[in-house]
Length: 238
Ligand code: C5P
Image (tube, rainbow, N blue to C red; front, top):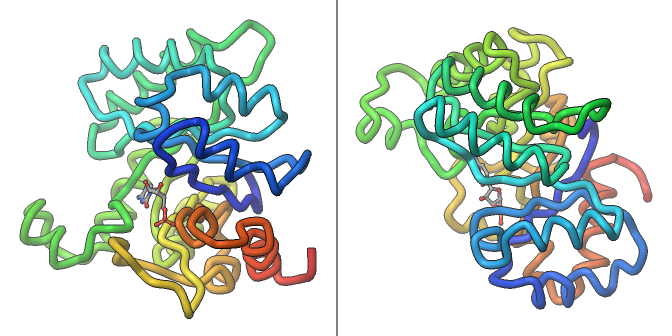
């Protein structure tokens, strides 16, 4: 996932997805399938995207008791996506169980999917965290706490905002991945996100991969928009 730009396929059905992908031709992309698309289309959408050679982040954010997460991850491993995730708030035992499930469901000789943990959603503000989740202190402190738990459990990284990525790298090392949604160009609408950052800022913070949704998927010219985003993210013409 290092240096990837992951496009969030937040579409209602596979027809809209393949309509969106048409202008990209044979280009191999890193695509995120989230709840909406997966609940509508099921594993079939993953098989089709894999057949076309794309990398896949299956973003279902599992959060349940360890045994349930372990069984679910065993099934998800069989879909052979590159990346899956859980909520770190589910706790250390749940994260360890997620990895056990993934190992158990991975074909012998194949690499298990990477597994990362959501820390605090990028749509959560510090005030909201303090008043609604009753977590005192700064949002950064909470994100660092969840990231440390995820690393101790053996996970491959976290989902966080670009604003916390530098501190996570400093504390947990650059091999521990930071995947950051909430990325916007200066001219973009923020929509429901709160902790947003530009692709240039994400790059300077040492983020491993950015997730970009509506800025590309709702563009009138998605291919051109993707290329502009890649240029901003990679810092050179692509
Ligand atoms: O459209 P936008 O760029 O805001 O899309 C961000 C994507 O990243 C969405 O699919 C959302 O579900 C996902 N995401 C997020 N914040 C997290 C984890 C995932 O926005 N902490």
